[in-house]
Image (tube, rainbow, N blue to C red; front, top):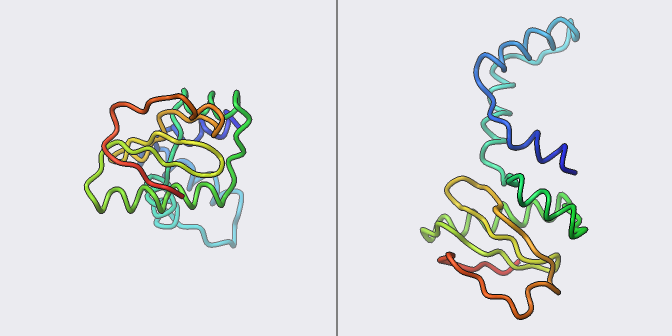
Length: 130
């Protein structure tokens, strides 16, 4: 899980995309995967929610299962919060609470529903229930 989070947190440069394209083109002769497709994938990935190193460690430590459904719900919640002008939001769902920095699409920390009890959320301007 943490390895996946490390991959998500990496920034992709144009040079890296060109190198990746060159190596893929060499490996996949006859298959079409152009630079434009790689660039589009990188842009789409940057618009999706990412987990900070701290949040990734908390996810693993607390045994929170990060599924495609959860990621989709987080992305939708962040989108709604962004439309309302939110900057830092707590997203609360069945899996727990996720504190998200909306402008950067980054989950800063997370906790299970049991850990939410008796806790106070500070430095947030919005909440979204999923």
